[in-house]
Image (tube, rainbow, N blue to C red; front, side, top):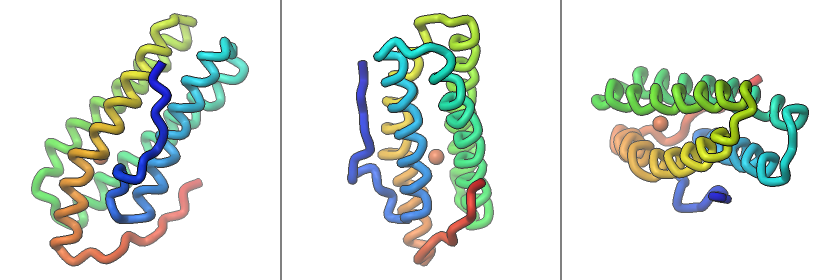
Amino acid sequence: MTAIAWEERMSVGYPVIDAQHRKLVELIAQLEEIIRKGGGGNRFEPVLTELERYTAIHLHFEEELLKQKGYPDLDSHRVLHDFMRSQVAKIRKQATVGSPDAAELLGFLMLWLKGHIEAEDQLYAEFLKAAGVKEIPVVPVP
Ligand SMILES: [Fe+2]
């Protein structure tokens, strides 16, 4: 089981985005733990629903920010986000039928997210820094 937690080197240097990434990592870790402990749908369901909700919010937030700042690689970044959206949808499908594959998919998603943050998200962060973006305003997330 891939119990991956937030690591400082995942920081993109903007606290608002780091906090969102942290929350995603925590939700995936929570789901993995529930599965590991053999927790049923009662405990899994609300966390998975929150992961679905927050994934949509976060990816949309990044895409809007990058659009606003004129990030040249937004289209390819969006394609990567579509992959994450499809993975979360797959987890929902597997969890709905009670398949054990949900655990494997979660482990994969965690590795993917970590790689995405450490590679592609760092690239846009470098772009933003070079463009003089000092901080990203806090947007209240419901
Ligand atoms: Fe991203």
